Image 1 (cartoon, helix red, strand yellow):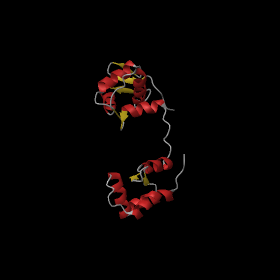
Image 2 (tube, helix red, strand yellow):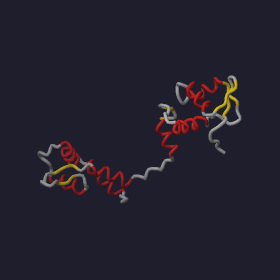
Image 3 (tube, helix red, strand yellow):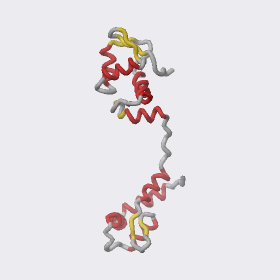
Length: 167
């Protein structure tokens, strides 16, 4: 990946700050190539924002912005398979939908089970309050957690019986 220095980014942004080059660039983007300033076109060409096509006509090169971003941006962090699943099904900490495939559903349920402390007994109403933070259908979540042995139940008392434990 080619690194771009800050000066090059400033130069491109500076072209868009100037009225004549901004107006000329906008005209090229919109296809209005009537009266274009030759001076502004040269500046845009030097900044990589305009180029001539095979016929000699000017065209905007907005892909220059993408190239600058790619060259300057930090590489994306690699996500674990579990993190990818959680990002798919949880938005702002809320469950958008329950995964249909069991392996993905288990990833989500193990994440939710971490709300409950191992060794602590919870009344059903407390479990419902905790699960409502993830989804309005807290009863279905509670059933999934019990069915997958992540929570155990005796009467109206629940406790965590499975899933990962952070030490």
